[in-house]
Length: 295
Image 1 (cartoon, rainbow, N blue to C red):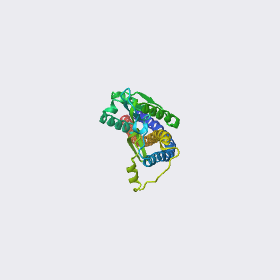
Image 2 (image 1 turned 45 degrees about the vertical axis):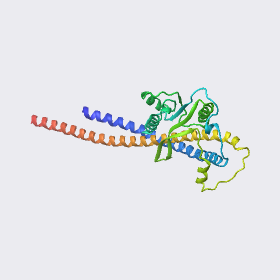
Image 3 (image 1 turned 30 degrees about the horizontal axis):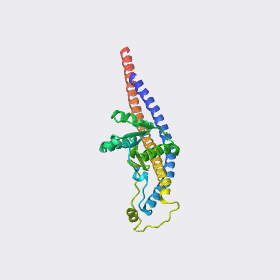
Image 4 (image 1 turned 45 degrees about the horizontal axis):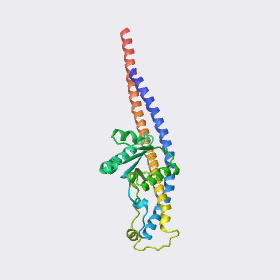
């Protein structure tokens, strides 16, 4: 009797877990659709701005800008590299955070300058991992499941100002790049300094034909507007890719958990039926034996 009661409690517990994981799967599916729409909507703008900067760099001759070449003049201190790692605020998203953090650790181990520089986080899940590995972080940003351009713009503007002032030598972003619903790849993106292709490389990509332009205003003034916009748009695209990748991973993880809970419930139900049948057989045997003893 005790065994059947215990199995029945486990069946009830597994059923409750299955309902929870099923609900989380449905929520993640809904969030994934919205996050995917945002990520795909911002990608043409990001690619268009970067293509415009690339074309400007290819046709304007030798150009110089602090966001490309770094600040000019002597510096009072040695700038450090800055690495931004994008993780999630919540767990239950399968291998998402593990893949990003492994890529970040490989990058830090292979680049002593980045390891000794500043490390910032977006999301709470990476904090405990980096603390366990004795990797100090200077700041943790929280932008939630629906990042706005204004929130990301503030972070990017801070990086731009510090880079132009000579406080940081470079900015790299470790995040999960979204390619499709079935493929996401952890990647290290160089945000600053921007490195548009050289004039010869751009001409080669266009088949050796380079158009001639007259700039109004001049190329330098255009760069003052386009380069900061490119940095902000690139970081915003990386954040959107990370959010949609997180929802894909959570959706897949919760579907797998729901399926496993269903299989476990079926297995426990079979065990319960067998235990109940054995219990009934034992009771019938005892009744028959008692009746035979009285006869």
